[in-house]
Image (cartoon, rainbow, N blue to C red; front, side, top):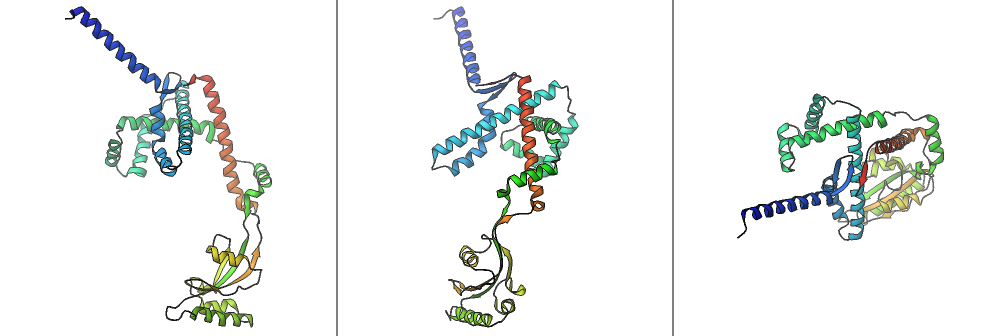
Length: 320
């Protein structure tokens, strides 16, 4: 039998061995250090878990693509977590203090918009295995990140007219308005007991129009669609507005030209193209807001990148 002293030393050695193993396991799961704060693989997976499920369903038959996309997703999540820690440390280093009331107000706002009441929030957190304190900590950190990001990045709100005009001129291909036509239609549904009824009626209508009758007036009498009151007028349409087969027929017509009778399974159609408009750039006024939003996003991204790089220089960031 082992002596009492031998047993004690054996037990101590075993405990030390287990402690060392646990420490090694913890260190092996660390993917990055921001100062003395570790970011683990579990932290990264928690950020991407739901999106990875969507990714798996989308690329279930393409495992190589799935693996590549998953890797990219986790790398992006890691960078986001690193940025978050850098911002939190900057908040602390600058001596800012976040009043408890602000966090509480943000939680109340989340309850109103996402959960309806506090009981639903509690049940949701329990189902996800998240404590309220952990949730509160996450909200507090998000308030801090939003505050400093707004201070250093989101404060830019204006783009000069010169920059907007310059982007428009250099990227006209982005703002092309597709070829469009203004089209009218007369459609007649087939009748089960008389398979030729629709085509014969449209034949009579077509001959009347060719003899000088007004297409829109006849459409008001015969068209079996929601545009009947407006004389079968579909207004300006692009190639994706009408059903594909009807669109092909319509866009093959010249301005002022009427189609032959188009016989389909459900009925017959007669089309008239009143005007055509070839593909051309949209006016600057109609895309100015879109350009401004794009340039604002680009500038904010640039400012954020520069800010994060400055924070990295001030802190210690190590990847594993």
